[in-house]
Image (cartoon, rainbow, N blue to C red; front, side, top):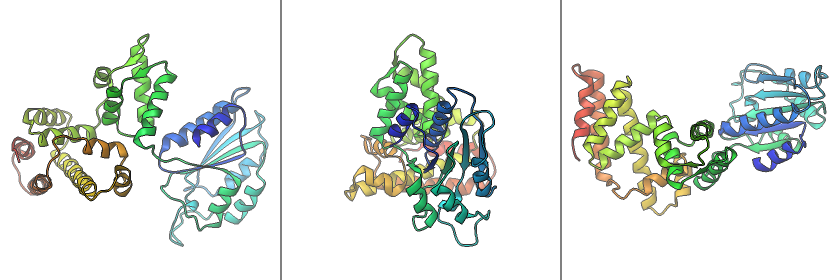
Length: 336
């Protein structure tokens, strides 16, 4: 859907009102930027941004109905349209005149492009304003891509820079960065600029240049631990300590990863397909794929024992004194 709309924007077909909802901010930011670029081709565009969690929607409509001063069309971005999501009655922070908005949506000004963003997982489909938004605006759902579509997107982003990316490099990039498309886009740009005239993005280049995240290092440390690779697990741990990471925070990350891993294996054992597991646990399909592809998959018994030991370490870190780094270090040195 986004590709189709982006093509229309590139061709100059820009609608008066858009509504983009969902938690994948890349699609929201990219659509706003593409519309801004399209409007700016002939002249500088007037752009105004409102936060609807702080400002009534009346201001958005008044701005949209005011003739532009410097250009033929102005751009208005109305972020955080919280009135579209489920919320308890009386819990709204701002009193929005939704009746006026309903009337305005039926006949918006043609000299303004207004973009409503709702960075929430779900909208309240029962609300009249939500139904009207679907009827009168270009409604786009900004949701995370599955692993197949994410791979296609990464290759297309690399191609925009005149580069190709090897399969192993693509897998390593997602493993290190995660599924945040804004972050992936920045890393692909960095890799492309580094390569210069070279065309191919390799696994070695990704490992050398891409910044490691704490979540990635914690996951890698846990994998080394379950693979009984003590030296690698300790090396990652000591590197994190040198980066001033707190042992108690690392214990929490390891425990969360173990719980996720255990849930993935349990659901897979019950016969659920990876896509269902991803949706059920609200994690990206690529993470599920990595866990299920492990050849040395830990047993449920090992996972639960490790989780119990981490709970004891967490208690020790909160109550005992002494060398705090030593507790988790001893855990990593044991072979369950």
